[in-house]
Length: 414
Image 1: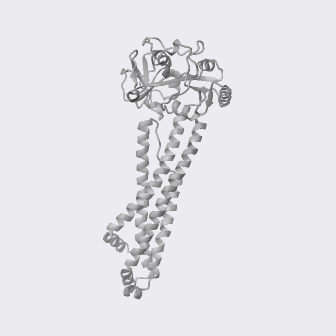
Image 2: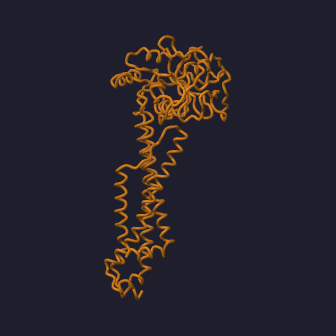
Image 3: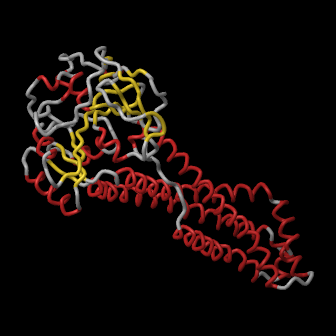
């Protein structure tokens, strides 16, 4: 029987190939949507887990998280500098790291921050060591630069009138280990160097001012100036965001409540904001999944129609089998096996193609955004494969049942 099925499929190879291709593409569409959404959700959650609390000026909480955790460029409003001073003196805080944006180099964002944040969020250094002077920099694991490389920061970008700062060139002293976050693509420099190069520490900035207003007030700095990360005394300039490491979970909630009640600040847990984004992503996923299911149903209906017609065209062959003594069950098994072999092959290939497509999408996002997106199947997916194959088996039974019920004499007269 197996030889007969194989010979029959080989004889009808063109139509068989079309059926497999249609089922493969329809299945791959749904699998790609499912795996990509899950990878984005897991990847973003892992990228944010190193950051417990973020404090910024009132505004979009989502943008605050996207800019601070995922380093997405945006003009954030500034909060008063005394917020950092207060946090530096707060017994509930392990460390509070200000971050500053605006500059870049060869497409990599330059982020002003502190050695405490780098030490707490990276697994050590793959080469070199921490910066110790204002003119030094630490690069993320995905930054294609070498130790000792010279970095001339550019404010903004060329397309929008950006310009290179001539006052300072950072020198790379260390390369951080891989973290799987957007910070792997960041060039991290002392926050005071960012303030100095934009002339921010020479002014009493209002919380509503943006760092871009100081573009014409650049001041040269001493690259060899020793690192100064004591923010507990003099008030720093306005800040777009502060990443905070509370001592305990209880302290985290107390700090969040305190800085949400302050009219000058807003405090958020990154996971809390991402949950809202996941809800939006879930809605989009449901829409895309519905489209994918619709496409699969259309393909299933079309294939069912094609197979019914195909069985009708093979009435003489089926009649001949019955006339030579083939039992009804054997005819049913042959027709069902041929159809299920085609459909099953298409489904399995669809899962493989969907996985490859989701991996391709994840790799592209990772190369552009910096954080890793894990693409993988889960146990629920295996149950899904079994369910889809079971449904396919039931659909294949309809044409096989037509062949089963066909009388030999009637078929031979057709």
